[in-house]
Length: 373
Image 1 (cartoon, rainbow, N blue to C red):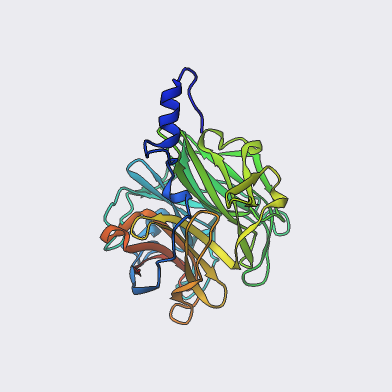
Image 2: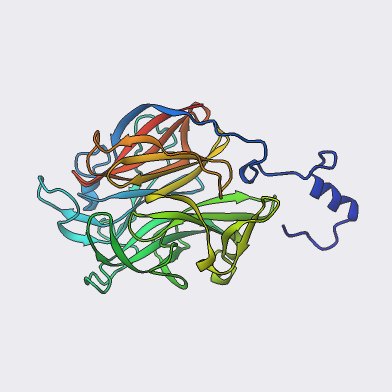
């Protein structure tokens, strides 16, 4: 926490104690003491709407988006940006999985729709001068070099949009791929144009290739951004890093969770190779948000071969509860990428909404479920 020079001693004491009679003011998002797990199941799972493709209410084929996937979300003011991966403009109607013509590695739609109950209506997409959804972060599109650049998640900080992405070297067997590196791109014009930030780069063999960020307010002037991270592919566990919002562009300021001290407090270090795993599982396409109904963290991800699961966390670093089935693979074959957004909930957070990709028909859908506690 940064303290302004010139603050009085009395004011400093009040700040540190939080006016609680001597006890330090704690952020419930970062405090596990006295907490227990409260999530005991999921009910009311429902596919609400299709978000992308010619058969969706958004008719994204008008932007030459016939098939696409992912759909992580970034909130910036009244807008929510929906970020998609490999996008194709033309495909045979019976085609399964990624493929087709007019390939772009990534595209973005945006919406000011605040009612998630019946799906999300897009206001538009980021397009070129003739109205075609344009590729935001270019890729070489050469196998075993740079096959594509896939956005894994993004955030809004310091008045700009940041999109974290992975440079894919080669797609391997199902659930496995090789990455060159992970990095980020920045936009200062509402997503119209993006600049790669080559000063932010994580090695392709690291545990920090796919990320899910969440901003936590520390005080009225300062925020920290926590990133839950997994390797390339869908078979690694979750590790954790953080950075202050003010230093989000400075690689040297990122810190990695390395364990707990003898008082149970988190320890952070500058060496990513010493990071500790906070969730041991086969984790693919993860998403983490704070849920106001449970007053707990929620983590969703694909467990390859089983389906989408959800876990409850007491703090960003845990402990994390057992995996609970959210969407079963047997009910929705070819499912992946369950992305939540704390903006889109109902019943005070009891109902959650999330995007989910289906390999057939290779498009993004809108789901909801209710949390039981």
